Length: 156
Image (tube, one colour):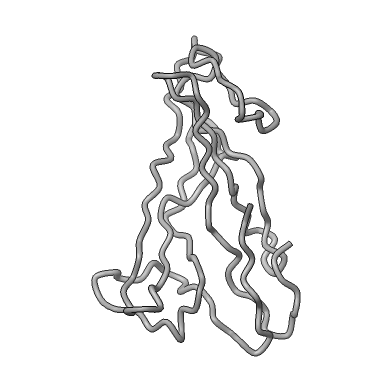
Protein backbone atom coordinates (compact mmCIF):
# COMPACT_ATOMS: atom_id res chain seq x y z
CA UNK A 1 0.00 0.00 0.00
CA UNK A 2 0.90 3.63 0.12
CA UNK A 3 3.47 4.70 2.64
CA UNK A 4 2.32 7.85 4.39
CA UNK A 5 5.10 10.07 5.69
CA UNK A 6 5.07 11.39 9.22
CA UNK A 7 3.64 14.87 8.93
CA UNK A 8 5.20 17.61 11.02
CA UNK A 9 2.51 20.30 11.33
CA UNK A 10 5.20 23.02 11.22
CA UNK A 11 6.65 21.56 8.02
CA UNK A 12 5.33 23.40 4.97
CA UNK A 13 7.03 21.40 2.23
CA UNK A 14 5.00 21.30 -0.97
CA UNK A 15 5.56 20.15 -4.50
CA UNK A 16 6.52 22.85 -6.99
CA UNK A 17 3.46 23.97 -8.97
CA UNK A 18 5.25 23.28 -12.25
CA UNK A 19 7.63 20.44 -13.04
CA UNK A 20 11.15 21.50 -12.08
CA UNK A 21 14.12 21.36 -14.43
CA UNK A 22 15.73 18.13 -13.24
CA UNK A 23 19.08 18.84 -14.90
CA UNK A 24 20.12 20.89 -11.86
CA UNK A 25 20.16 20.07 -8.17
CA UNK A 26 17.34 20.27 -5.65
CA UNK A 27 17.27 21.36 -2.03
CA UNK A 28 16.23 18.39 0.13
CA UNK A 29 15.27 20.80 2.94
CA UNK A 30 12.72 22.50 0.67
CA UNK A 31 11.54 19.43 -1.26
CA UNK A 32 11.41 17.07 1.70
CA UNK A 33 10.39 13.46 1.14
CA UNK A 34 7.64 14.35 -1.33
CA UNK A 35 6.93 12.44 -4.50
CA UNK A 36 5.55 15.08 -6.86
CA UNK A 37 3.38 14.13 -9.83
CA UNK A 38 3.37 15.94 -13.18
CA UNK A 39 2.39 15.53 -16.83
CA UNK A 40 -1.21 14.43 -16.39
CA UNK A 41 -2.67 12.53 -19.31
CA UNK A 42 -6.40 11.92 -19.79
CA UNK A 43 -7.33 9.26 -22.30
CA UNK A 44 -9.30 10.67 -25.26
CA UNK A 45 -11.70 7.73 -25.43
CA UNK A 46 -12.12 7.61 -21.66
CA UNK A 47 -11.78 11.16 -20.26
CA UNK A 48 -12.41 9.98 -16.70
CA UNK A 49 -9.21 7.91 -16.95
CA UNK A 50 -6.38 10.29 -16.05
CA UNK A 51 -2.93 9.63 -14.65
CA UNK A 52 0.36 11.41 -14.15
CA UNK A 53 3.19 10.12 -16.28
CA UNK A 54 6.07 11.69 -14.32
CA UNK A 55 7.01 11.68 -10.65
CA UNK A 56 9.91 13.66 -9.23
CA UNK A 57 11.58 13.47 -5.85
CA UNK A 58 14.72 14.99 -4.37
CA UNK A 59 17.46 12.58 -3.26
CA UNK A 60 18.24 13.67 0.33
CA UNK A 61 21.73 12.15 0.13
CA UNK A 62 23.11 14.15 -2.80
CA UNK A 63 20.52 16.82 -3.72
CA UNK A 64 19.90 15.33 -7.16
CA UNK A 65 16.47 14.98 -8.70
CA UNK A 66 15.09 11.50 -9.31
CA UNK A 67 12.61 11.52 -12.17
CA UNK A 68 10.45 8.50 -12.92
CA UNK A 69 8.46 8.34 -16.14
CA UNK A 70 5.57 5.91 -16.10
CA UNK A 71 5.04 3.44 -18.90
CA UNK A 72 1.27 3.86 -18.57
CA UNK A 73 -0.46 4.59 -21.83
CA UNK A 74 -4.01 5.08 -22.94
CA UNK A 75 -5.24 1.85 -24.46
CA UNK A 76 -5.63 1.70 -28.21
CA UNK A 77 -9.34 1.66 -28.81
CA UNK A 78 -10.62 -0.50 -31.64
CA UNK A 79 -14.37 0.06 -32.00
CA UNK A 80 -14.86 -3.64 -32.68
CA UNK A 81 -12.78 -4.59 -29.66
CA UNK A 82 -14.85 -4.60 -26.49
CA UNK A 83 -12.04 -5.23 -24.01
CA UNK A 84 -12.58 -3.30 -20.79
CA UNK A 85 -10.92 -3.26 -17.42
CA UNK A 86 -12.61 -5.28 -14.69
CA UNK A 87 -14.88 -3.03 -12.60
CA UNK A 88 -13.11 -4.11 -9.41
CA UNK A 89 -9.42 -4.81 -8.91
CA UNK A 90 -8.78 -8.45 -9.82
CA UNK A 91 -7.04 -10.92 -7.55
CA UNK A 92 -3.54 -10.81 -9.02
CA UNK A 93 -2.42 -14.03 -7.34
CA UNK A 94 -3.93 -16.04 -10.21
CA UNK A 95 -3.47 -15.80 -13.96
CA UNK A 96 -5.21 -13.52 -16.44
CA UNK A 97 -6.51 -14.12 -19.95
CA UNK A 98 -4.59 -11.88 -22.37
CA UNK A 99 -7.38 -12.28 -24.95
CA UNK A 100 -9.91 -10.80 -22.52
CA UNK A 101 -7.64 -8.22 -20.88
CA UNK A 102 -5.94 -7.06 -24.08
CA UNK A 103 -3.27 -4.39 -23.82
CA UNK A 104 -5.13 -2.42 -21.18
CA UNK A 105 -3.53 -0.75 -18.19
CA UNK A 106 -6.27 -0.78 -15.57
CA UNK A 107 -6.18 1.71 -12.71
CA UNK A 108 -7.51 1.03 -9.21
CA UNK A 109 -7.29 2.24 -5.60
CA UNK A 110 -8.12 5.89 -6.22
CA UNK A 111 -6.94 8.34 -3.56
CA UNK A 112 -8.26 11.88 -3.34
CA UNK A 113 -6.21 14.29 -1.29
CA UNK A 114 -8.03 15.61 1.80
CA UNK A 115 -6.72 19.16 1.38
CA UNK A 116 -7.49 19.31 -2.34
CA UNK A 117 -10.35 16.90 -3.15
CA UNK A 118 -10.04 17.68 -6.86
CA UNK A 119 -6.59 16.04 -6.77
CA UNK A 120 -7.22 12.33 -7.22
CA UNK A 121 -4.99 9.61 -8.56
CA UNK A 122 -4.97 5.87 -8.78
CA UNK A 123 -2.28 4.17 -6.75
CA UNK A 124 -2.41 0.76 -8.44
CA UNK A 125 -2.28 -0.21 -12.09
CA UNK A 126 -2.71 -3.74 -13.37
CA UNK A 127 -2.02 -5.22 -16.77
CA UNK A 128 -1.96 -8.75 -18.15
CA UNK A 129 1.37 -10.03 -19.50
CA UNK A 130 0.51 -11.40 -22.96
CA UNK A 131 3.55 -13.71 -22.91
CA UNK A 132 2.71 -15.75 -19.83
CA UNK A 133 -0.80 -14.74 -18.68
CA UNK A 134 0.46 -13.35 -15.38
CA UNK A 135 -0.74 -10.11 -13.85
CA UNK A 136 1.68 -7.19 -13.53
CA UNK A 137 0.71 -4.94 -10.65
CA UNK A 138 2.36 -1.56 -10.14
CA UNK A 139 1.82 0.40 -6.93
CA UNK A 140 2.57 4.10 -7.17
CA UNK A 141 4.53 6.01 -4.55
CA UNK A 142 2.55 9.20 -5.25
CA UNK A 143 1.50 11.18 -2.22
CA UNK A 144 -0.85 14.07 -1.66
CA UNK A 145 0.81 17.48 -2.08
CA UNK A 146 0.19 20.72 -0.22
CA UNK A 147 -0.36 19.55 3.33
CA UNK A 148 -1.98 22.30 5.35
CA UNK A 149 0.54 23.06 8.12
CA UNK A 150 -2.31 23.56 10.61
CA UNK A 151 -3.75 20.13 9.78
CA UNK A 152 -2.08 17.37 11.77
CA UNK A 153 -3.75 14.51 9.91
CA UNK A 154 -1.74 12.11 7.82
CA UNK A 155 -2.77 10.45 4.57
CA UNK A 156 -6.16 8.72 4.64
